[in-house]
Image 1 (tube, rainbow, N blue to C red):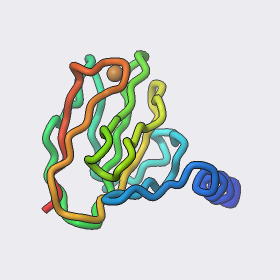
Image 2 (image 1 turned 90 degrees about the horizontal axis):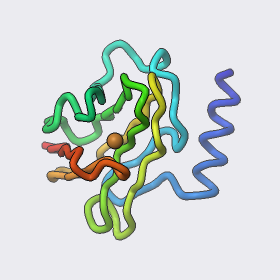
Image 3 (image 1 turned 120 degrees about the horizontal axis):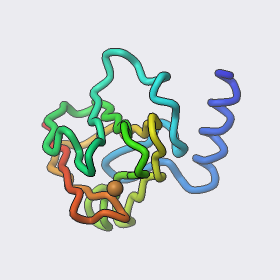
Length: 125
Ligand SMILES: [Cu+2]
């Protein structure tokens, strides 16, 4: 299981480039919410909202979004926010998680691709 995860992550890295300018994705593909560490910094997605729409973290922290409802959601940072290219996270089904590790201080706005009224920001201090 562990080696499969590593291989998959590595394959995704080679295929699409997991590195963005100001954040890195530990895994390009969604992970089961059950695999998220107990002490993780989590933004739940529920009722068509990011439960913590503004989250403050430190440089090097990893933020994990977990979709808690049946409607699929993602996180989408437009071009110029984290990198020259947009970072469009994978769609998360219920109880799937996606993480980003923020490597530079700043304020980074995001939204959900199919639901642009769903908005949030990560403030990296
Ligand atoms: Cu959404």
